[in-house]
Structure formats: C-alpha cells, structure tokens
Length: 237
Image (tube, rainbow, N blue to C red; front, side, top):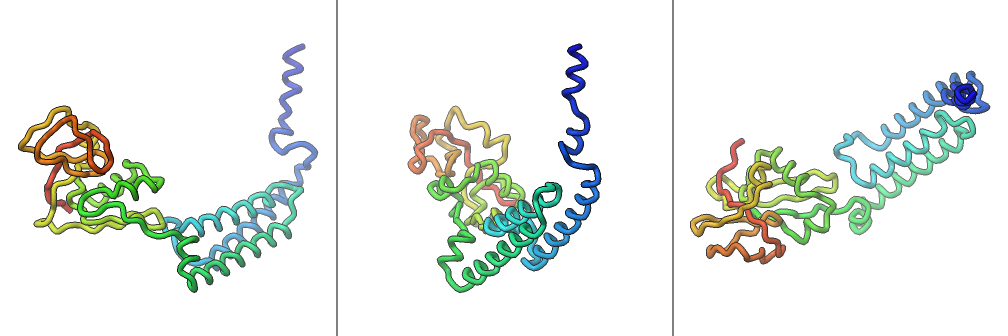
C-alpha cells in the first residue's frame, strides 16, 4: 500500500512538463526560443564586436539583463513576448544613452566603467591598493606567471584593468631587482631560518627585509611576518 502511494506521488507528467500544461506547448517553446534567440543576437550585434573577455562590468550588467528578459518568455507560458521585447528596447536604449554619456563626461565613465588600478610598482605590491580590490594572491600571481614572471623583481609596474586583465611592464634584464618569488613550490613555503648573506621578501607585499636579519621583525608595510628568500634572476621568455 505504501509503495503504491509513493508511486502516485511521483508524477512523471508533472516532472516532464508541469501541471496543467499541454504537450502542445512544447511547439510554442520552440517558436518562443527561436524568436528570443534572434532578438538577443540582433541586440548584441548592435552593442558592438568586443569579446566576452573584454566586457566591462557595465556591459556584463547589460548582458545579464538581456539574458533574464530573454529566458522567461522562452518556456513560461504565462510570460508574453511583447513585455520581454519592451524590456529589450529599454535596456538597449539605456545602453546607448550611458555609452553616449561616458564618451562626454569623465566622471560618468569612471563611475560606470571603473578605472585601472596600479597594483605593483618597482617590484613590490602596492599593499593598500591590492587590499581594496577583490583579488586574491593566487589570481594575481597566476596572471604574472602566464607572462613568464618568476619573481616580482622582474616587474616594473602592473595595472589591473577594468576588464580584470593585468597589464604588465617589465624591467630590462640588466635592471632586474631582488623580488618576491611567485612560483608555488617556493612561495608556499616561507623561511623558518634566516642567514645574513641572503635577502628576503615579504610574502604579502614583496617588501625586502632589512640587511640585518631579525626573524622576529614584521614587515614595515603590511606588518606581516612571513618571508621568502628573494630572487633576482632575469626573466626567460
């Protein structure tokens, strides 16, 4: 008896198509999806040719808005097409208006698009700027390693662009300075003993330890006390 009740509770039709919806609605889903797909394609074509990697936060917000407006009418029978199309018209009109304003007013551009942030200068992380960004050390170091960087002393400066990409400017080989190694098998194992003939970099900001070694001394920039032996090897590309 219990097994029969459990079978009745598991309604295959409700699972597949929902309650009070005829199977003929599947043909309408096909038509709705086709219409909304071509509307999305047309709107994205109007918005420009930049790739997803190059989208700003503003443009990503536009894409999410369009996706939300397009998704519901595709398969909800109680959501009509005309209101969704009106949402598209409003969103793309706002896009064109804000794009026009960002081209005319620097403050609007800075608010909407954001501004590049300098994260590294002269082989050291600008700690205060880095802490303000929602960026982990792993993310920063991954992007640096992808450019064949093995330690921060090879980097003259680096900027976090509004797209999330990292723009890196390098020291020439003869000007490379001591810096924090960012290879995982070195970075992940801070020093537990120090030698006066070596130089050490702070794990958190890249600041160099003073010549006189003191293993109890914290970093003067970030006040952390984790150190890695500094490198000054040239960058190999």
